Image 1 (cartoon, rainbow, N blue to C red):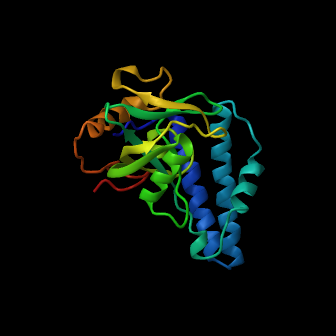
Image 2: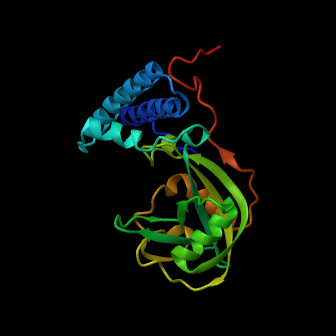
Image 3: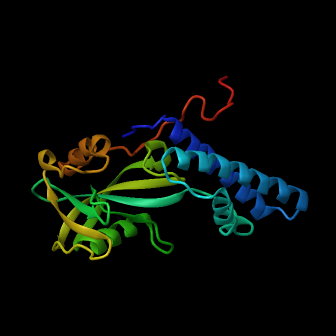
Length: 233
């Protein structure tokens, strides 16, 4: 299920977010003024990298904005340990072998229902909640299809893991959320909307699951080397 983006822009985004995360975590745990100064300097380096990436994609913003944004989101101690955000994706199938897709507002791109994981809910509960809220369909989680690294796949510019579930539709009626979507519907494998995000990497497994295939959850295999400068032995 991997379609890794090895472009320079993807690498710059990864380096920037990783440096910023290290520095923000350091600031969350230390009270040493010398260490705080060093971590803040690392944040400025990360901002330089991020600004270079944003400029390369014609999204120009001030470097100082990035630093301030990161500084404003520093917790203290364990709550300040920076980790990837967690999103939930739902591959929902019906008895006709069709998949449930939503049209994202305002981009107009179609994708399976997704949402951020909410505190107080299990991952499977978030799936049920997001599908109902976005589409009006009641869904039952069947299996975990995979854990996807959003940055590595190239569809986020910040650290994010998506837990992708296969679900079975059990009831409800199509009723798209008026703020989050521009519509929703059921689609056959050979009749997906023209602008369907990422179907080249998820569609085959999604429809196989809808048709009854049981999977062992996939994940992005470790890179070799895993990081710039990592020893190969």
